Amino acid sequence: MKQHILTERINEAVKQGRTAVIPFLTAGFPDLESFWTHLEGLDKGGADVIEIGVPFSDPVADGPVVEAASQKALANGVTLRWILEGLRQRKGTYSSQLVFMGYYNPFLQYGLEKFAREASEAGVVGCVVPDLPYGEDEPMRSALSECGMALVPLVGVNTSLERMQKYAKVASGYAYLVSVLGTTGARSTFPPELEEAFNRARETFSIPVALGFGIS
Image (tube, rainbow, N blue to C red; front, side, top):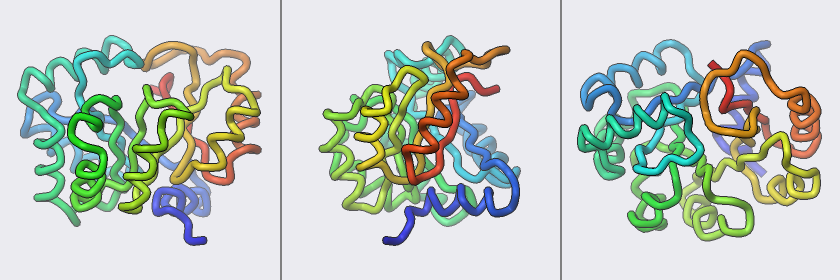
């Protein structure tokens, strides 16, 4: 079975003897024009994958920095349609693989099949949806899969081996290990159980495991 393009890109970095770099930025922040400049800068700077944050009014998994960026982007008039149209116009200009990170509501309201089709046409290859747990994710996974896109699973330091194994059976692209119990944002230290959870995830998933939430 052919590997997903996200898996290929991360494994390519590993073969080069380095850690794959997956930065995040909120769409439409700090303003509509400079967002595209920053996206281009991350791409030219060597990002392997770029997670584009879809602004949402109630970003429950995000800390104050990302929440403020999301609110500013919404005030700037950013919508999912605006992001998709901007990416469609620029399709083929980025070397990095593009992934959406966003909450389920905007995707559901847009229409899952319509969203997956238009996102794929715009060059997006996957989605990270923090508030969409295993057992409730099948409709979105199916819609994305039909268009060759990955639904990246999130697991945490408190995720049991049994639950990780359930995610691993349906996961594609890469697995996202949430490094802390809490919201996004830089940390000076990590919980002592992180190393054990990371090793558990690496043993469970056949795809790469990325670490996030507490990374600056």
